[in-house]
Length: 377
Image (cartoon, rainbow, N blue to C red):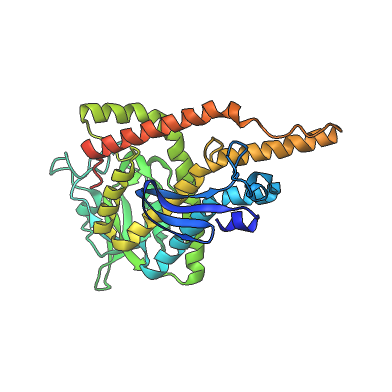
C-alpha cells in the first residue's frame, strides 16, 4: 500500500483475510477492514494490469502506467514485508525468550541401544543385555565431558564431532566431571550407526555412545541476535525451497493417507488447520517464543511463495515486467520499435490452472488435517 501510494497509484482496499466482509471503515480513498477467512490479506490497487477496469478519472493513477522501477518495488513490497517481519521475530525471540543451546554436559543417558546399523541408538526393542556404552561406563545426567580419547573438547560441536568420529566397537577413554566438580575417567565402546546426524545437519556413518547433550537457555544481546536472525532466515529460505520442491511428490502420499487413514509423515504438508495444531503443540512445549518462531517461518514461506514466477502471484507479474523491460532494451539495441506489453489474456489459462491446483490442494490439506492430523508428539 505504501509503495503503491509512493508510486502515485491509488489504493482502494486494504483487508486482512479473504472472502465475505466482516467489518470495514473508509478513510480517504481507501477502505480498511477484515474478511472472514484469516489466510493472509490483500491490497487492491487501481490498474495493476491491462486487464483491470479503471474508473473514469483514475486513469492517471493506474499502477501499470507507472515507471518500471516503481511497479517492481510495489509488486515485491508484500514479500519484502514478510521477510522483514521474519527477520525481526528471529532477532526478537533470542533476546526476549532466549535461545536453547547445547552444552558439553550430559542431558540424558539411554539405558540400552541397538548395536549397529541404521537403527543404532534406539532405546526400544532391545534386550537388557544391550546396555548403552554410556550407561555401561557409569555416565549420568549432569556429567560434563572434558576429553574424548585424549582430545580436549570445549564446545558442544567439538564434543559431538569427537564422539561420532570414534571407531565403532573399539574402546575409548572419556574424562568428565560430575556435578560436584570431581573428575572421573570412563571407558566406552561406541556402536556404529549409518544414520548419524552431524552438527552441520548432514547424515552419514558414525559412532554413538547413547547420550543426549544438556541444553541451556542463553539470552542474546542485539548484535548476537541479528547474527542469529540472519542464520535462521537463510535456513528458512532453504527449507522453504526444499518444501516447495517436495510438494508434488507428497500429494499422492497425502491423498492415500487421507483416504485410508494411515499414519501421516511428520514431513507431510499441512494447511491452516494443521498449522493451528502445530502452534498448540509448540506453545505447550516451548511457550510463546516457539510459536513466534513458527510465525517467522510462515512469513518466510509466504514471502518466497508469493515471488514464484506464476500468475496470479506477484512473482508472476514481476516476471512479466522484467521480461517486458528486457525485451524493450533488446529491441532498442536493434533499433526496433517497442513491442509493447505482454498479452495477459494468453497467460490466463496458466493462472486459472494454478488457481485450480491451489484450491484443490487447500481442500485436500484441510480434509487431511481434520480427518487424519499429523502427530507432532
